[in-house]
Image (cartoon, rainbow, N blue to C red; front, side):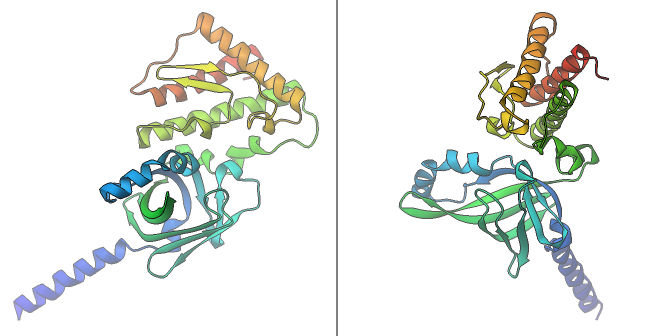
Length: 280
């Protein structure tokens, strides 16, 4: 009898643990960082097929910041002010996303499982003449320090102004961009060992231990956040002046890896430009 009771108690505990790992809307709501698509489960031939599309797959969604809101609203944060998409948790642990933006307009994440703060779900993709299943890994971001990455307030600079801005407003918009991307690079440095430069809409080029500027492009994502080309050029010139001062008098930051150094650089650039423009 005692052995039977012990068995029942053990079974209850095991079932409870399994239930705790189950998915629910409440467990999925919040901010997420897409880490990487895992392909280790593929066969040798499938890996060869996947290798042909791997860069484009990672470039499409790798290190994207996502927001799964209550009531099924979904946003890629770099498109936060566009019409939101929708997400839902379907039976059999399937996460369905519609109208979620490029790469997520019609998405089925199957066999989804939440392991601590890592969400894993498989997706079938075209790889040459065949389809292969990759496993997306997403990290739930709960640290309040990184809350601005996901909030409307932390992303206000993404809203293109409808009227002309003065130099102070242009400078403030630029400083907000630098603050945002400093936080972004910091969370990336804590979460993975690589980065995707196109996620950061600033006119920079990145080296292993350094940052430089690229020529101003009127059609660039950076320019799209300003009222017109002239005002985007003003923001670019502020960056250029800040870069010149840092190059002449500053020291490039040193950190545990080059990605955290990018974060530290963004902070130094923000402080330098604010000082140059007399903004506290």
